[in-house]
Structures are given as C-alpha cells and as structure tokens.
Image (cartoon, rainbow, N blue to C red):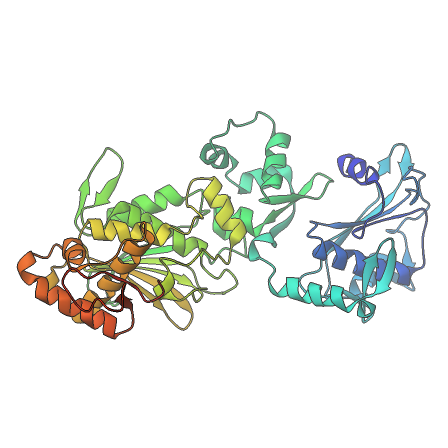
Length: 480
C-alpha cells in the first residue's frame, strides 16, 4: 500500500481517476464520486481509480483524516454495503484504512466501469478536472464510454481477483515466461511480479494483492481450469479413425496456457498426424504436412478466435485425409483475401504478447507461409471456410493432379496467383502452375482449361486485357 500511496501523492495534480479529500463528505457525494472515478478510469484505460481521504487536494501533503468508512453506517446498514447496493452495475471497490507517514488515511480502490456507465442511485457521473459532473451533460464522453465498452478487449478483464503475490506466481508459469522471453529469471518475487504487471498479465492493486488478467491466464496458466473465465478455452486435439467424426480414436484437451504449452501442443499434433517420420531425438514431424504450415494454423486458431464466445474452444481435428483447424468466431476479413489483406486481430494484446515470446508473428504473412509451404510440397491447396459461428482452415493429404476435382484445382490456381502477386508482383502462368502441381508439360492444355475456368469464376484476370489465353500469358488475382 505504501508504494501505491507514494505514487499517488507524487501526481502533480488531481486527475480524473484520482480524488484527494481531507475529511468525510456527505454519503451521496461519495457514491457519485465512485461512479465518476470508475467511469473515468475506464475511459483513460487505468487499472483502477482511487479516492484518498487524508491528503490535501492542493499541495498533496499528508494531513490525515477522521473518516473511518468501515465504522460508518447509513441507517442500520453498513456504509460499504449501502454504497454497493446503490451502484449499477455493481462495480467492485475495496476500502483500505492504512497508516501512511504517521497519519491515518482512508482509501477507496475502484475498478473501472465494466463497459457500461456506472450509475449511483440511477445517475451516471464523470470527472471533469477535479469535479464530478452528470455524464448526461457530456454526451461526447458518454458516447466514447459506450463505444469503448462495446470494443473492450477480453484480455484486459480479470480472470481471478484479489490474490496474494505468492498465489499469483503459483497460478502462472513465470519461469516459462522468462524462458520464452529469453530473459534471466530474477531472484526476487517482487521484480517478477513487476515484470508480469508491465506485461499486463496481472494488475497490482498496490496493497500487496494482485488481479490476474484474462491475458495472463490464457497465455501463462499452469492450468486454464483454475480460472472460470478461460477454463473452457483449452484447445482440443482429436484424431479420428475414419473420414467423419463418428469414430474418434484419440483426443486431448490442453488445459494449459497458450504460451506455456505451445511447443507441447505442436509436438502432440505432429505425433498424431498420419504418415509421420522421426526427424530428431524429441520431435516427430509429418512426412505429408509441412511442419511450418501446421504451426502457423495452430497459432492462428488460438490468436484469431472470438474470446467472447462461450462454450466453444479452438480445435485441431485429424482425419486420415485431412487436418481441420477451427476457432470460434467468423473471420474479420473475407477468406479469399487471407493472403493479401493487412492483418486484423480481435485479440491484439494476446497476439502482441505471443509475438514477443516468438510463438507467432504479426506481419500478416502467416497464411502466405502456409500457402508457400503447401506449394513447395506439391500438396492440394488448403481450404479456408467461414461457418455460421467459426472459421476453419483445412489441409489435405497428398493427392495427384489427376485425382483432384475441378473445385480443388481452381482454388489452387487462385491461391497460386495470389502468392505470385504478393511475391515481388510475379504473375501466374501455365508453366508456373504446372510447376506448382508437378504436372508434366504434355498436360499443359488441361492446366490452361483450369486457368480459363478460374478467370470465368472471377478469381483471376489477365494482367493485360489484350493478352487472351495464350500459353505464355500472365494472370493476377481479381483484386490485383
């Protein structure tokens, strides 16, 4: 608590998420201040707002206070319970009565508004400078509060509240964090907790207690099931004996943080892939599916899922002829533009953390890498699908050109044109497509028909409108 108070009294002036008072003000005013501070803390992206009695609001000198909120009553009701009952929604706040610099203080630690304006006795308030004002008088702040609330990231909410530092470190695999970050593990827990707080894996209340964020639980939990908010988001890996889901042969649910357990997850997927071969002491990789493509699609399923969807989790489903990677939530961009569109992530904080820990990249080239690896291994083109409530990527086992149906060939033709175009603006030609599918030159006419069909479907177009369908002609994606 002393560290927190040191920081607060060093503030050069009162700000909208911090109020200093000398002594007790009328109970209703305190409720209005909680509403105002909570709403302001949310708007300014603060972990908490604070009301401190016993500090002068002009020079921030510590003067002490006679206010004892835990002894206060409103009628026959405890003051704290009365305040909580008048707030809507019931935003969490805590009362602390420390001795600081030899003076008794009273501190209210107020959580930010949960995405909707916090009201006291039906009225919402906001801080303007050092004063409380009705939120309705500041429509631009009210609009911004609603807007930020509708887009508040899941990662910033709390998965577990009010835990000790020792308990926080027992719940999160901080050793793995330092290993992945390629940093030396500090010898003292206070330094470790400070680092995890800076990474937004937890929040420091300033009084020796911590709140673990959804980001911290999702990424670094020893067990996701220790946290109600993320316990159902463990990725499932299922291998089926047949071509449908009627015959599961083996399944695992990875009840571990995404960063903490990523390498174990990837190893498990490779072990279950059909046609695997040993390529080292510890890791077995598929002879048919490129390891880099598998890794990228697993990472995508974790990072791009809609974390607000309940009762659903990412999955990897392995069939004898294909592997399906599914995540909850529709894609933010059209599936046919996965290769060229700039990256858009629902979970930017999670993506940024996993990038720093070298688990994924944020350059928007993950799907490019997948397509490139598939082409290099002459495999059928992957299929990216949007369902009613999820996004699915499918890799297919090795298949000859002769065995591919027309839809698969056209999809491969379009993807090849996209990859050529984003790779130094090259074009698709009959020769390049034959090389991509390992088709002999004597079958060039068959390849030309697929190119023509892909043009007719509006997926590719001649680079030059006057070129026609000559064998040496070049083609680019429809968006090029």
